Image (cartoon, rainbow, N blue to C red; front, top):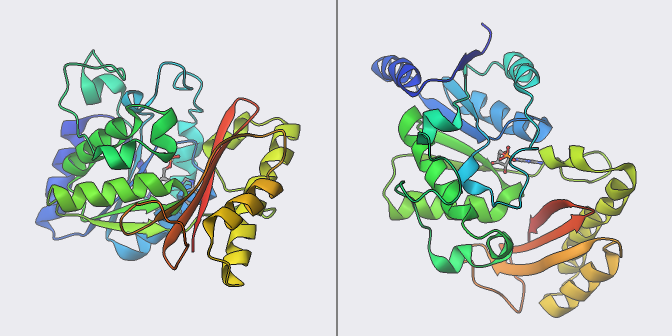
Length: 286
Ligand code: AMP
């Protein structure tokens, strides 16, 4: 059976109601489309775990700043459908911004109930340069949870801060859904897969390769017994290509999200840079 594309909220709610009547276990894989092997790994995991798989493809306007890439973000629904067909996903839920939010569907929407994750989680790392971003993410994810009534949702560790915030939302708001984290999928040369990699020129891509090298360097030093995050920071910095604009290199406890001076097991080491105009992130959990 090929994947069915549904754009309408009531339509998908009716299908889900039938599935629930049959006691099917439902998976949701939230994405912004331009699907790649990273997304595929989430969908495969969802197929293994659940009876029915919904992949949402939605470039969410309320999580993009005015100076960001909402308009040029790659939209490749035909290819996304082919991949979902191959992987056996049941539904692609691809609503329009209007279907999700009505007419007023931009970041500065003042006519919408937002989910506001704690300030301490959004005022750091990616949230620092992207004010409002994680409010927009948490809001759309809660809407998708409610629309799909999913039992399991699959998120990549690639977006570690997002994963942490979603888990916190599920706990704080007593949501009946299980969050399954999935490992980062990389190109053979180490670059973490991202829909935004398509923006990179050949040169910018070559510079970007040093991000995963820096992440690997942190892993290697930590495994050799080096815990001092100043040392880990300096060594990552020395590996990063000088043409990259570094936004942050940070070490956070992945239980509490507090900054750590001494890395230990379950410390998140995260990097964000710009290669040319393209913002890229990568991380490891030690
Ligand atoms: P996006 O379409 O970029 O919003 O990503 C949708 C989901 O796919 C998120 O949970 C991401 O963390 C996950 N994802 C994106 N890239 C990768 C990757 N390289 N490896 C694993 N998961 C990924």
